[in-house]
Image (cartoon, rainbow, N blue to C red; front, side, top):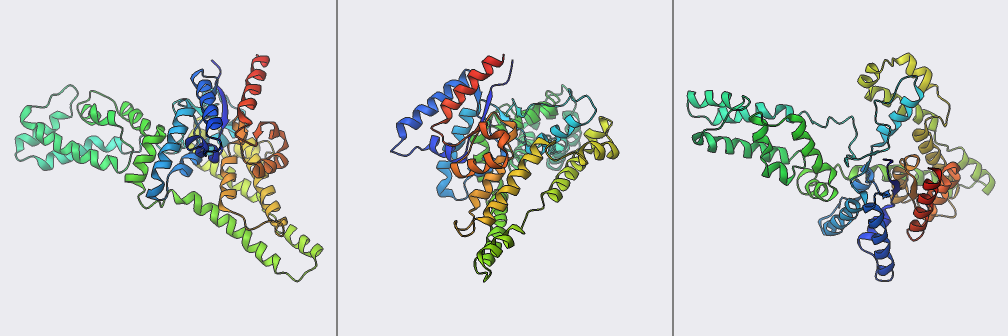
Length: 412
């Protein structure tokens, strides 16, 4: 069965669908209803992305309720689909250029299990592998006699049972491990109600099954955001990384523009001076490609790809052959240059404008992409081959989706 049509929503769409203004409440409610029907019919998905998750998480407690409402919209419309992290998509592009069979690798841009985490993160988190020893150690420490310590060892054998006299000891140790686990991973209610740690301890379930259940905590945007804000990133140090990155890029552009604004040079010379401030996207490209090789060495080694083959096929590839990386760099370079050249017509570059660039990482990998009018214009100019998939307003999106679905049927 072919995958549904993939549509990437703008952050403003998620907010509007969650809390429409009084003026357009009815029309937005109808759009949300239409989207839901398409998702239920498995014709369309609005897959969640890591960037969307980071933007939804509230920075202040007073915005918590809105964050949860936005997360509910994302969960509702994703239909269980999530966009793979961009580094994984970039790596897929690189594999396609190599003379190897890539059928064993995930060639889709979305994961059907809702997993938006980078594949370089060990989904077992190396924590599960230590759970048995962790529990065993706590049980031994709590034991009051040699016979109890011996029973601890027996507990770890497959098929063993816990004697009633040892139940309080086991419960205490498991509670301690659960508390530690919840500080590091979004533990689901089922994980606790089915006591999967005890099942793991007794050999009644596998580490893989435990990991799959833990992953569900990540894949549920509502549950994940609540856990993330309440237990994991209380000071928002991780959440703020995207915003700090956007601020840094914006500040750099604004600093240069501030110098130019006060320049005594004639207008034409000033314009030439600005044009000299070009972003070195070639260097950026080389660094991204190098990181792809470093982060995927084991996979490449298994596929028979050494550094020489990687250099010949990927490092030395022409601009445009790596669709994800090259599309992003085209957009980044154009945006940077336009922000420099329009110093007299516009105010300072806002953080939100830079954050738009992060969402644009997914442009090549979806069927339709929502962006506000200003950024949509930039996308269409910077990467004209994608201009037909860029939608400038939420109101236009339902009709664009229907057109895309009709075209897909015709192609079949």
